[in-house]
Length: 222
Image (cartoon, rainbow, N blue to C red; front, side, top):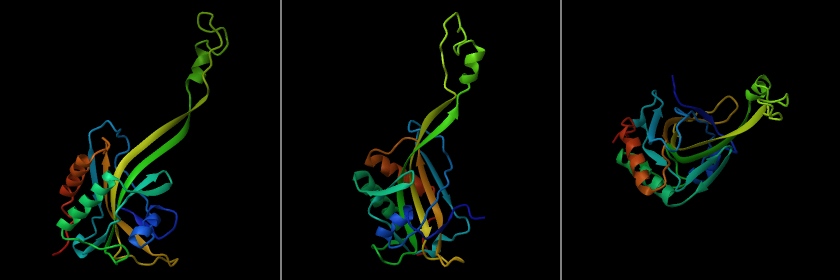
């Protein structure tokens, strides 16, 4: 069973943004192995790949010179010292494994994206104290010790921030058309960096080295 994702070409998504740099419009979805790590946790490197894929069949890859910033449903490309280091290191790691990088617009076997996810979610939850306020004698019914007028709202809003880095690879070599005539591509490799945020180039070096060290199956046939 394939563990990663089937994608269809489309607009308005992360891989549609990469059309500007890879020369193809690809729609991406994701699966996160760990969702409860905070920025204060130590770095955790999670790699996953399609077990049915023989990576030796791929020779070339296309990698933009910028990082994609994903904020909920919006995407933007960014270039700075951190993104440049990511691109340089990922390209070097794949080259060392026998893959050849091609320039923008050239045909490639693999599409590679480096993604900085910075999502903010807002939710609404019920407040159990709205019940207990009456039980305890707060809710304006004389109050505890004669102090009335306390009030707990029945619902409250909360915000959750989800931040991590991700490296994805999609199969551009084998992308058959679907019944609707759209081309389908597969995410065949996904690496996620969670925990302590990456804020300097040395952290980039450490993360990329760790990711590719535990991805021995990424090897082109020489």
